[in-house]
Image 1: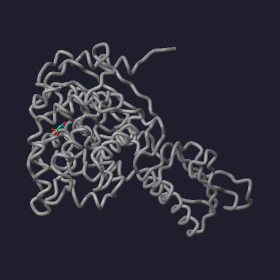
Image 2: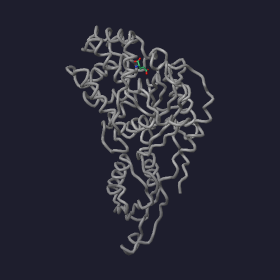
Image 3: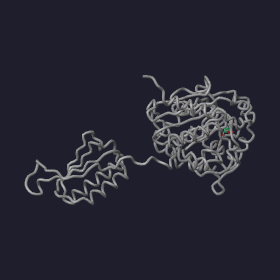
Image 4: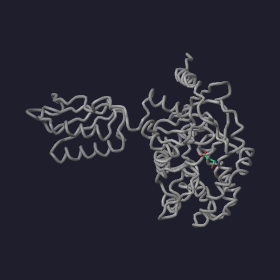
Length: 414
Ligand code: GLU
């Protein structure tokens, strides 16, 4: 049977929003100003590497556009991977700036850029990649290869957009001079901006972006190629900074309304991650006054409403962890209380909350025998806290004189 329920939903969504023609395309890069304002596409990638991509018009879903500021979280990931969290933190902070993306601002005390999602921070991060001595070419190649690993295919740079942006880079040049004056970057201002603008000119589709975002959501493992592209710790760090500073000076409003780590860029893309589950990308070039794509933003708002993505509104836990607790006749032992056995049957996913409930139930129970069976047959999964806590429960029951038998046919504890 071939019936694309998710594709149909995404196509419906694009159609619902197609009449929204608000906003303006970014005008400060001539090549972007001349771009078709109409493309509209959305994609998401699951933690199993399944990609769903749809476009409003023929070709929209496969359309390539320059990554622009959506490169910032991924370049930050590469710098963290190469230099480590502490070293990178010497050059760029993790606090939201609340200012426009290209503001000439630095942390007053440390002179570091406030975060890697604004231009001052992104130019600094770009310079950390491949070491101080790197040529522009080697640095850019390193970035291109890393982004290609994240996307799971070879990406390329669009030299027309790059050249076009380099002709209108006065603001970014002034940022580079400012960063140089405080010793935050070592290259000439010109080289630093060429390197940064090339990073911004890497071409991607919504599917590429969904997969790149899904790699972050998946703890650094590319969900299709299974390559560990960056460490889990790096993936967490990047998404945390996206959550607080990814949406220009609308980051607070975004977190309150949509509630996902996200990043947007002037070419009209927005990416979001649902940690552990999904990478999402939407694209349409017209931007609102904060620089975020109007239609892409609406896509995220709808997805959030329909799929319940908001991190602060997790689904309620479905099943209680203790399925039953009962006393049965025990044929392995004989006579008096020796002939009885308490059977504790657990079920569902065992995490911290489940364990708290399990322990409370155990303590309230009147044990008729020291023989106890903990039956995990109906348990789906035990997370790392769950495993530690079940081990602790077993030790404590033994210390209280119980004889414990654990039935774990599917080896959920191992
Ligand atoms: N290349 C652009 C710049 O630095 C990226 C800006 C953006 O996407 O926000 O001006």
